[in-house]
Length: 257
Ligand SMILES: [Zn+2]
Image (cartoon, rainbow, N blue to C red):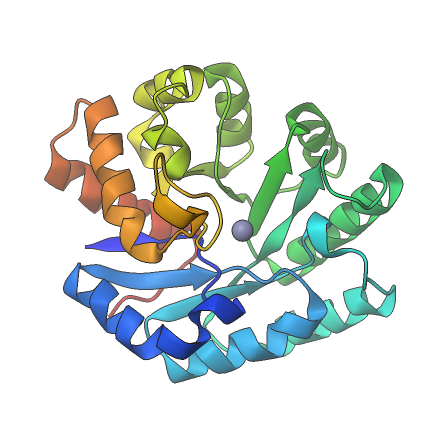
């Protein structure tokens, strides 16, 4: 079995085909999906979706790309929502820093740090979004002494940086980047990482795979990403798949009975 640890199933492009898509995932042994929250106005719909579909879990958070509608009391609402959330809520996220986001650095960092404090208060792991800001995110995690860990989603980068995040309690979300022939550094990193640090994700509908037509990503592509991962690793396919499910259920405390 497989779990897509990062997929935006709440985005409008999936709305009309959600039930058939989820049964297709099931047929391909993708048994669970984790849906990260990106902004306050999407949280209600995500919670609704996850109460309808038993295989879906979620996180709530404010993504650096969605700060244009941000208001200070969104953070209070976030904390309240996490405290009163049902068991399907398994993380705070996705949150982080992004060099290419429109919001300025000060606002991004402020919202990120406040969400780290909320995660700490609520004892929740986080789903991290980091683009060209690895050093700064590491600095902040250390400065606030963040202890809940979580997932660095859609990881790319060096072995040394990956190990720094792992030391701080993070697992690494492995996505479509490894299907690109020129992603040599990231592929080399992923071939060396401890198996216990690996998670699989599509980040659909974003992060299209290499040569994917139309640029539209689908959670069914998780299998292709897994096949690419197998080429980088020495473990057997079944061992790799089983350990990745274990990693995912443990970091998000999923109850898979
Ligand atoms: Zn995402």
